[in-house]
Structures are given as structure tokens and as C-alpha cells.
Length: 48
Image: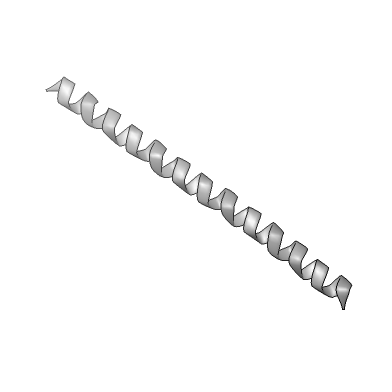
């Protein structure tokens, strides 16, 4: 049975790493969009 437990741990670890990477990617994209928004607002206010 220890083999099954370690296999479950490995699967859980892999799944956790996938979720963490997805979350990190989403946060990175959110920051990029926020920067673009701020730049767009600055450009709009400069051109007025």
C-alpha cells in the first residue's frame, strides 16, 4: 500500500504545481492588462 500513497502524493503534487502555474500566469496577465490600462488613461489625459 505505501506505493499507492506515494503515487497519490505525486499526483497531488503535480496537480498543485499545475494550479500554481495557472494562477501565476493569470496574475501576470492581469498585471500586464493593468499596466496597459494605466498607459491608455495617461495617453488619453495627455491628448485632452
